[in-house]
Image 1 (cartoon, protein in one colour):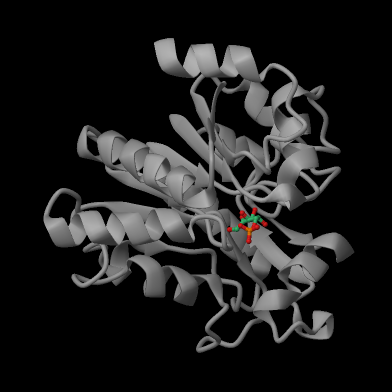
Image 2 (image 1 turned 90 degrees about the vertical axis):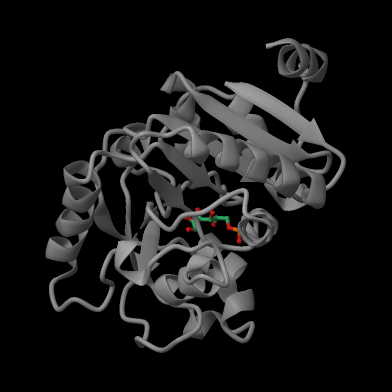
Length: 257
Ligand code: F6R
């Protein structure tokens, strides 16, 4: 695991974009795993800028979402498919085509089948080259909440109260409007990606980042499973890095590897 510590969220976004552009421009299987939430928004803005400048395009690529809420109306702006459309789809964004954006169907009458279908779509299209991840304040990745099996595949789950409180800001600050269920790539599904880029910014993430980088592998801090993956880059700002203890070594490794 490589850890890069940057002064602020904008620098994290710029570095994340550099890594995504380099990885996708060199990839033979042009499949990108995409996260939603606030953290990747700087990164997506940088990708749109690079597309406008002609140095990056997802026109011939596929994007696979990490997760989706269950039973959010099709036209709701916070439905993750719509968030990702707004950020990435179209020639005025990154060139990604709508038919090449794969999201779990949270409105399928059978969510279990929809979850299996998403897992199969990733596998059948050759897997994910680079998976972008954020991290929840409770250490979730995707919506794999504490206690999720470390080998899980894409599945239906219940959101914790903590996650619903954290995400109420997207739903008029009203927790009763935040969906209770989701479909999420499992931890085993995420671990199948050839490389992983996790970004975390702000002090609300400092405990989760401490566990991710320096804690013991445990389903109670689901992101710690990434310690078992051979190709993970973690980008954090100073606030999210506050509890890390081996920062001199992370810096040496960052600068020399
Ligand atoms: C989103 C996702 C979540 C978020 C996490 C952090 O697709 O899978 O794991 O990455 O909840 O969200 P933000 O970035 O809003 O703090």
